Image 1 (cartoon, helix red, strand yellow):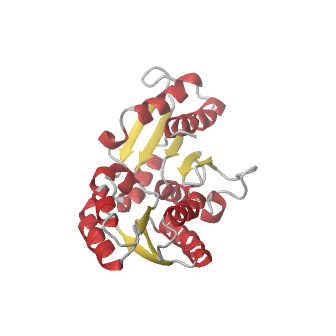
Image 2 (spheres, helix red, strand yellow):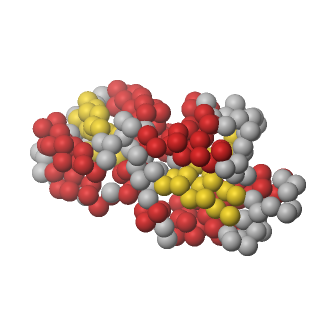
Length: 249
């Protein structure tokens, strides 16, 4: 599913709790939380979210209000953000990253939460099952963690003589980083590959990542899921130049 359609589906889920409320005199409020910046998430993705709401009958400023919260990659701000939204008694929280979903779940057991995650929501403890989420939490998953081992397998097919690969994760997104590392390490063992796990919590860590790849001898890199990588993909492009210089390629 393309990213735009995925975000649009989040909006459709978000509209359900609003429609179920019986407060015709009060405009419902959506607490929208994302780990990016307003600039980083703007454009097609935000328009997709608003389009999904409109298709469910909700137009921002007319019959629904949206409180936007952006962490700009600083996940440590999430508890405070969620506390503020709970105190404001928003109608529903749209938590569009894994850390945001976990923070929302920790903040309230009564306000409906709609999440977007790249990992298994059952393993994360967000839901009891996919068919019956339970409690006040529901949402969608792109299952990016499950795809990561497949990406390593593709690299191995492209570079069959390579014996060493690397995985880049964001340690600040602990749940996602741990699950991705676990799954890709298991795949590396099956393929007989050495795997170097590299960490970056912000764009300021990329220079160290470049240096580590140069020293490790890794022939390929799997970039893990995470907002910090999506927002700074242009800064990560020089990695490809480092990799193409290796003998394995």
